Length: 492
Ligand SMILES: [Cu+2]
Image (cartoon, rainbow, N blue to C red):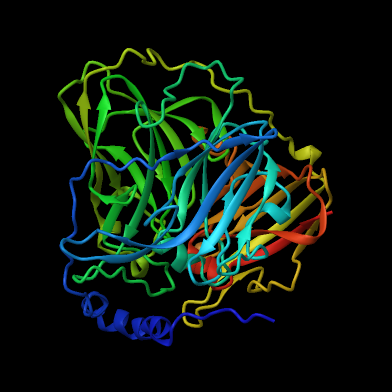
């Protein structure tokens, strides 16, 4: 039986020491005492746009080739950084799939260590999910196949290697997956890299010698250098018209409270698993790890102006306890700059009034309600759901195929945990008994459960029964997932 990897003794003990430090009032100095020499990070590059991989149609199937490999990247001036990537040095291509297509992937592992590739948010058979049970040994190729049934939206693929997800994703094993719907007649910006931009947002810590520092910590690993598509504070040249930004929080633990430097409003049009019913106007969008949000920004008539995409992290109260906050959690910081160029002949002229019809699942139709309590032991380092740490040989729940279920996720007294369920897209019924905000009323596969909160979600478990291979549910702070805040369910 696999034993969960623990946080290093040092990383747990630091919180034991903290108890005394609070009384003594000397905590802040202690926390930053070992700060390494600041790395000279390369910035102000053009925003890298990951190549779009549309696959090759062979005998009715669309085939994609993905290789997880070691790479060398440049983040720090005159220094090399050892990284991981898919088909490249760092991150991976943006995989483009069509709703309704039969897809097949050849996933080759050249990392020199085992890995998995999980299709986050995609509804598919458990054996094709790329979770901890679908390990790809070093040198092997895994060949999942499935029909793409998801709604058009922005998804995510990443390592889900048991006990190594945190480190492998941190080193670069993450990419965007976009599902398109050829039936859609909506006029939305949809030309990749032209008026429709992928934005993979992450935070890293670099040493002066270029090393990417990774050392698991109980609050999750946060870095002081922000990367967008693998570049620090890059510049996006965008046309003077409506543009779509596909925001993916691919960080291990950091939350972002997105907004623009001029405080302009924008419209969220999609959540994790599809378009919202209507565009939602906002000035801030909070995304926790693995959440996605597609937004439309109106740059019409603004040629030759500049603005910045910012995380107003200082405005998010009550999500992160003081001991888990780093310097960036206490301020507003830039993610990228946008310089507005000429408009293009193709342009979305106005935002559609309606985007999608979302079939609301009713509470009365649910056959089962399950409870999930997320807990972390500050001093023991234990990470549990309903008092249990992940055990790959234990099935925690068995769901009947076709059933609609309500899952109640509660977080008694910790930092906020982003809870992710594999296989399905869910709808949020309530946060502490209150209806969710408008932008959380669409399809979701991650929900942030705040301190002291109980979130009720509802989902239907269709199509894929398998009495042997489970799906996962877990906290998407990757250090929490890897240290036990994960469980398994079968659909039968
Ligand atoms: Cu967590």
